[in-house]
Amino acid sequence: MKLILKQYLASLRERGELDVVLPDLLSQMGLNVFISPTRGVKEYGVDIAAVGSIKEGGEKVYLFSVKAGNLTRSTWDGSSDQALRPSLNEIQDSFIPNRIPPEHLNKPIVICLCFGGDVSSVIRQEVTGYEKNNTRGNISFEEWNGDKLSELIIEYLLKEELLPKDWQSLLRKSLALIDEPESSHNHFQRLICFILERSDNDEKASNALNKINLYLWILFAWCREESNLESAYLSAEKAVLLSWESIKEYNNSKVTSSFSSLLSTYHSITSEYIDNRIIPHTHKKHAISNAISSPCSIDINLKLFDLLGRISIKGVWILQQLTQSYEATPPTDQLNTEQTGLINKLDTLTESLKQLIHNNPLLLSPYKDSQAIDIALALYLLCQDDKHDEFVVSWLEAIIENSIFTFASNGMYPTILQSYEQLLEHRHKDKANKKYKHKVTQGSILYPLLALYCALYKAENAGGKLTSFAEKDMKHCTLQYWYPNSSSEGCLYSNSDTHGTASTDFPIHQKDVIKHVSNECQMSKTFHLLSAVNKGHYPLVLLACRCYRYPIPFHVLEDWMQLQ
Image (cartoon, helix red, strand yellow):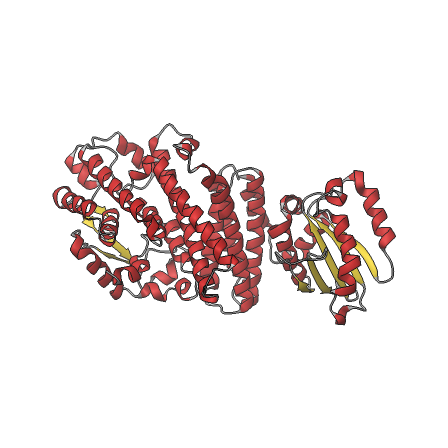
């Protein structure tokens, strides 16, 4: 376990990673952290400051200057502003005389050189010499390297009674199987469930979330090192959903803070995946399709729609952050820096989403009816800004036309089949056989979704084609949609059981669609009673629907429908 932790710590970046782990560790050790990392504020060499006693020693002030990885010649005394030695000088020249709170001035001061790796042997003499030459009076130095940090994490965050051997085994298996993401993720999910089993009060719940957060960071660091983020991405989704199921009843600020930290880690992982691995290639024709590296169009189709959903849910989270920022600081003459940054992120993501669809034509031809879930997420995100209206209408028309054509020509039309094996078998079936054809298209959530958006966008041409198709060729098909019900709160985030209600009398005519959906939403008010919606985390509901393959509730469109 110590070796795993040390490798994890050595891989962390300085900002937003290593300096995020350290305050939690110090708090768990009983220290009072009075300065935490803050962007845009001059730190005078100090990243983190804490006061307290360690292992029954006297009270001391601990000042941490944090650096990433191993301490080398360049990171010790290089030309970079981020070198450690100039930071240590600044602590002694500026921070200690001017920024230590008055009540702590007479206490011993320990300047801590903190880094995730080791001191390079070529500068060991220089570092030791610096520490000896500058130790005086009440000022001393300590090195908090990867070894020491690992030992402290094991002692204070991963106490033996909180981390049995079989839990350690699950973490090791998850890390060892990163190249087999599904297996790696399954082991990590079991670890999450074991940890959450013991979170039956505020204190235990907060500690459980902190441990899950730490393990998720470890998995993320290893996945990033191996350039394979799939296991970390899947595990991050399940971590936030299962954790929310466990702590949703708590209103304790400590639990809320721990969940916010876990959510921040989830966002870091999804940003690394979407922003750095997917978005840079969306503008290239067929680039993402080719990167899937399969000769079979079924593989490519399934992965493309999966990516469509992943990008869209990322956009929904950014949209929620922007909304919360507007509520906290209503824009007046101009937006603040945070709001401008979020808008730029959202614009980049939505443009990349449109480029993904434009440059990968398989996204115009769903093979599975359940891919309506990913389409719904993308449509919901794009409908938030009317500058995307023309694109959305053209995408709706293309999906409808391709669905009609593939059904008429006995191609890969949307079916209720779910698994890859079923789709592969379907490809070689006699798709012209009427009995078989009706069997695999006996129900649909895709066509109701398309019908609603055609009505909302007043896309009469596309809506008319869909209506004719449904009345002529789809009389056998049960057009339906799903709505959460009273059992959804207990099952939605964990997928512990089936839940919700299906509406099966879905009208396909444009003039009736909006009225029908509005009435259903009015009758099914459970969506607004869901804990994630009530407590300001409504994207969790959409994330759960994407992960567990439930249709996206039409309740998210209620405001728009009321304007029609």
